[in-house]
Amino acid sequence: MSASLVIRGGTVHDGGGGPGRVADVLVEGDRIVAVGPSAGGHDAPVLDATGLVVAPGFVNVLSHAYFALEKDGRGLSDLYQGVTTQVFGEGVSIGPLTPAIRAELEASFGLVGPPMEWERLSEFLSHLESKGVVQNVVSFVGAHNLRMIGAGSDDRPMTAAELSHVCGILDEEMADGALGLGSALIYPPGCFAPTDELVALCEVVARHDGMYISHMRSEGDHFLDAVDELIEIGRRSGARAEIYHLKAAGRDNWPKMARAVERVEAARATGQMVTADIYPYLAGQTSLAASIPPHFHEGGHAALTARLADPAERALIREGVRTPSERWENIYLASGGADGVMLLPDPKGPAARYRGLSLRQAAQDRGADPVEMLLQLVEQEPGLDAMYFMMDEDVLRTALRNPWVSVGSDAETFAAEPPYTDTPTHPRAYGTFARILGRYVREQSLLTLGEAVRRMTSLPADNLRLRDRGRLAVGAYADIVVFDPETVGDLATYESPHQYARGMRHVVVNGQTAFADGVPTGRLAGRALRRGRFL
Image (cartoon, rainbow, N blue to C red; front, side, top):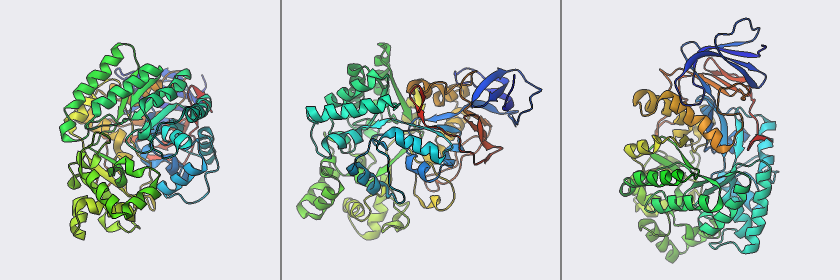
């Protein structure tokens, strides 16, 4: 048997969840051709895996690396952890686009450089592949995009004609290989979509055997209601459903996690496909403006700015931030207020000196009320991000131990070098997968090594319908990682996030060695994937 690459002498965890076995893995071209006893006599490059674990490449179920990879295809913070496939589309996707969505993305992400010339999601993924990316890329269609196409930023249901129009667009994107529909229902305009509208969209998804995946309407005070809504959408539409970053936000809501798990288990017991993913950290990250009630965002950022400039409206916004609500997810209160919000301003922006400070510390520096300080910062730097410390370790463990929970970083990917290290970020960008293997496998034994590998490989690949991915098996694509189980772990912290994980030795993507002996090779062999086959 011929081979173009041999991975020799490692303990193979094939993605099935069971114990490992010592074996060689032979690769020919982009496929695995053998997994078994030592195979000598091959005139092919050898990656030494003696004393190491050999596993399928990790699938990052929730990645925001779309523009990061467009700028820098090396994907290093994920590559150092063994990620070989990036999955996009939480609420927003980089297609389908209209002039209004392009303008919003450019403003939200501070984009400079070549214009976004594509219109459809499949065109963007092909664009990434043609530029060169180290990981495979694939995406959901953003429900945000469809809302913008149908109803703009208005707080209302789509009309029948608007809904029919966007269902047609979704049908075309699904036919072109999109994974399904991804929503983010705490953010405008996604939060303006009623359940029936989401069911109608998901009926289109179900016809293509796609998935509905959602940052639910609530992870806090209405967490259980939001779980029920996701299950209902999946049941009524026939689409498989997944919860993005399963968590209970806010101390009063931590006890709800056990009940949320029970509800998912009950749905699964009926045969309904409901799953979830997680990142192993106690803080989330999103915009500081997300602390402002969604109805003040109606009409877009310009409308919010105008409301902030009106003294009467500004007073209503301040009161809205301070007050629990039946209508929206108050992440400011879920974090315990200003002490639980860490600011991540642009290091070259007007609020740069507050980087790494809590909102309360920044307010004290300026001699301002914390909520008023929040509004001032949103005015000065609309894209300012913050970390919100809302979660609990025991609750995280309650979620992670479930066999239907996979892993996603909910982050961009970075290189730990200038100018990328100037960008404020969450440690999950550098540590998510390594933290699972180091903290929750080696240190705490919450998961066995084989089970942790399954959660990051075959489980998401099967859920997403990524054919021939996620397993070390004859005929599968050669996405392979080799790591040291005794040293693998995260080094990134909240205070110093730009630090690569440790312990990864080799990474192979589509049969090409992207990472060898702990060093990136520069090979960019990632491909644009589609549900069930290539683009």
